[in-house]
Amino acid sequence: MTFKVLLLVNKTLGNLDEALENCQKWWESLEIYHSDNRAMKAELLVEFGTVYLAKADFGKDSQKTTENLLKAISYMKKGAEMAEQLGISTLLCETLDGLAFAYHSKGELHNALNFAQKARDLKNNFNNKAAKADNLKILGGINLALERLEEAEQNFKEALQLSLECEDQELIAGSYGRLGFISMKKNDFETAISCLNRSTAITDKLRKSIGHQAQKISFVEINTQNYHTLELVYFHCERYNDALVTSERRKARAFIDMIHAKYWSRGHLPVSQSLTEPSFEKLRMIVDNEKAIFVVFSD
Image (tube, one colour):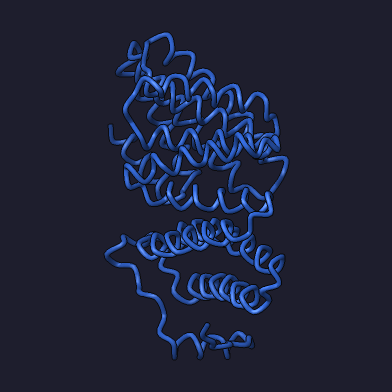
């Protein structure tokens, strides 16, 4: 149980190599003390897969990314097979979604679609709205990659409705963001602006509650994509001043995250010990040190 807790903590903090070590130690412990516990082994195989999937998602080297994706798929397939044999439906659904995401990342969209649809069929038997919304978001992303705009839009609309019902702010923000992107693709610019502004507003609020800096920087990448899409929409609408303001907001957010990580890095401290955002005067001092330009403006 200790290794399981350590695994979950390290996954949350983004310490993926340490999480893999915990997976291995948990497996060795199972072999010694609970070798006949197939349910726990199925769960651990899936955990191995999700950690490798996270390593692939944040990897910079393409060869390593492919290797981690293949390992993730291998472990999750074994976990899914065992979960299906044991009738552990919740774990099976989670794993099928993971496989859909992995194959999507690998560029095998039809395999990804197959696993996402299997997960959706199983989740229809449950009353977990957040899980259903998460599956619809994955399904929508695959349909979007396949350029099936109508199917993707329907997926994200259903995901948004379920997210609103269960008040899952991260899923709400993600659904609005993808609906905004689809609206832009369909040249419905007013709807795109409305959806993207809602998404960025929610994401900025969520970001403030994240205490760990590495997670904060990773999380804000989602919002950066929304800002970039919003810039394109404003440009198409010839609202150049709005496009400029959006661009400056995006760059300012990235710059603040960079200097916060450089000047306020405290490692993996608990949230209660994490430092607050720098003051305006401190930011001005750091900008001078970085030989950067700091523009203060209001829209």
